[in-house]
Image (cartoon, rainbow, N blue to C red):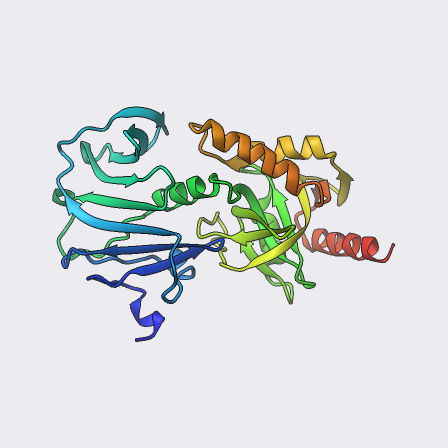
Length: 308
């Protein structure tokens, strides 16, 4: 059966294989009445059978009882993180459902294996479900990256017509979605994401990867590109770029990163990782006009630097 035939729902022992930033996650269930499904964004990141970095088992359960351990972090929203012996527990609750979590994800200390338990009374039997539904899938990847694999940042990322990666960094409102839409219809350009990009390093090359967790433009692609330029965004009346020093660039990119702040080791790694990769990546403050002139300016500057 072709992969496309498996996208909507699946039950039984055959897993889904999800690959994000060259990290492969196997998701399966032994419960015959638990149908696993994925949405259109995750669908793009499914791959054929592969050797997984992470194995996740999904199951039904009763979450009205059970110990949670030491609370490590409270998102202030739907999830909280606890540590129980050598296991990390993500508990997801909803005010509409009450205090009993609708889902608990438990993982070993390396986040290489885990289990997702769904509170059966909250769900309709036969209803296809994605057990790693956002934000659990992103939380899993963020913690995996923090194990000296890389980092996720709040940015738009594109592959330019030469195949080089460009990273446009900023918090909400900085112009990431606008920038993504400006590049969207340029021949030879791939928009990797309009909101979240993963950075990894391999054999001295810094790569940017698309992720499923898109922004307003709903642009997400599983491709990657070698990073050749990073731009801190700001709206302006003209297009202008000013070099940013490495120390300042590290600080600003760190502030736009998704990190497990409850893990001091992860913070130390992330700072060191950013310092290392930005040694070879030129960084700029980019003021831009929200029209095609911005793209023309960036491509012109790229060409000018290539010939000088």
